[in-house]
Image (cartoon, rainbow, N blue to C red; front, side):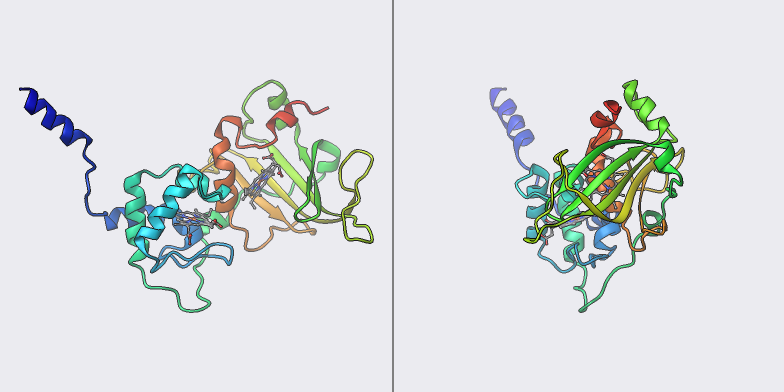
Length: 263
Ligand code: HEC
Ligand code: HEC
């Protein structure tokens, strides 16, 4: 009897080496990875690597490192943390089997992620609360964060931000001195020079329904606006969603605490 139990324990503990499931890999890739890497591993932008024809062992090793955090990238850390070991083997096998990209080839952006429900909040300067400022040393920018009444009221009540919430950030270039270093004002923040663009996030019922589960931020949508308040072309909402996704317990918002403390 002892021997039998020993054998069963061995069976349960032994790693089950089975062949990667190419079809499952394809399904997962189409649902999630395609938003950035393209359905066949030819990516949608210069900032995102192609995966087609890459070695499967390399892809799997990168996914493991991105999941355990030894390789750092906010977007991919959030994605990989949602993949099982089996998912990794499957997507790695699928992408590795795709033909490599011809020079300059690029996939089309996923239409569901290119479209956003967020419209420019006209009159925000009068009706929104300015609740936070942050310096961006790498890009020499300073950003001012604004929130509408719905968002401020919920944050102050310690409630999740409900439908109708709108958060807007103004991105300014910083004034620079003769040595090209940003000039800091008395408040410790860079002195703003020129308004460059706006970023925004907002939520309404149903806005998340066409977004794949691994990227979905409940019903939040994201947008970037140009100075003439139009949607900036070529914005891949998948990147916004992926980076904000791990913040599901704080309404997908990095600055919820500051919002709750808004004056
Ligand atoms: C929101 C965009 C986005 C999505 C969705 C996404 N990725 Fe990525 N992926 C990136 C970016 C950006 C990088 C580059 C990371 C870096 O610079 O370290 C990357 C890097 C990788 C790498 C490393 C490639 C290399 O050459 O080292 C692998 C592997 C990878 N992604 C696999 C996947 C898989 C599998 C999925 C789907 C389950 C996926 N990614 C979904 C944006 C995305
Ligand atoms: C690499 C991760 C990352 C990506 C990608 C990203 N964000 Fe964020 N976002 C942040 C962080 C971190 C903050 C908090 C303050 C800061 O550093 O700006 C933030 C803050 C914000 C805020 C203010 C509300 C809040 O969450 O605190 C808005 C609005 C916003 N982001 C919109 C966007 C939009 C639109 C996109 C896509 C075009 C995007 N973000 C992509 C990391 C990211």
